Image 1 (spheres, rainbow, N blue to C red):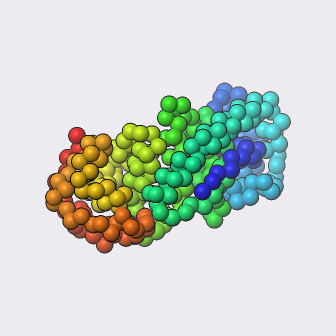
Image 2: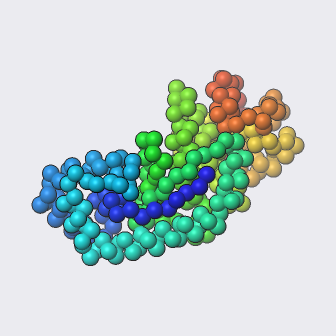
Image 3: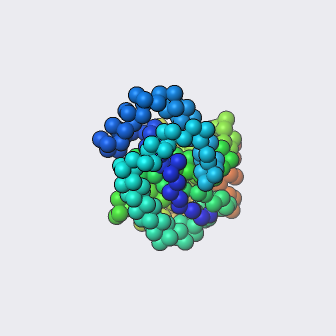
Length: 276
């Protein structure tokens, strides 16, 4: 898996036009465009997926709005800020990609495709993935320099969710819970050195805690070492209540999802849990 970080004018302009205004000048420009070019503005809203399917070669049917933004002085400043942000994220990825790729491979046990990451201004607070066959996502989010790997984990979670998310969609809550355990919890924990196991969608926390003992088995944690992981992740259970499934350490994430689906009645009825 690798990322190519790109700043594209059409991707950037579309996000400036149709997400929250990041400055008074941009807000004023958007109001002016709306007042004078309502039809063109409305038509441009539908350009998102078309742009992301082939940003490099995209040509709008009507480029009036895009040209006005391109020629504005405020856009020039935003483009410079975005280029700087792109360089920061690229450096962050280059510093961490070997470690991330190693840990991700151990967790998923299958390969993830390469993706184009289209960088927009970080003030837009966006992490958006194209749902078509194109391997592309849009990134513009602030991050804390003391925990920069959290941003990379969120990017990878978006990608893995797209790659795996439709798998066995009848049981989408189980699939989503396992994906959170894999990326938002285990990958983030592996990269940061401290536990992220209580983070994620609150509505999935019950299900994730029920899956957690089997998840440790999947990771290859030995029975005698599970207490250490429980302490690390602030999730306690009685290991003696569980059959130790050694084969889980030899399967990939898809097969682990299948195991959880097949055994969901057994998993959900376990009550010996405590979060401390």
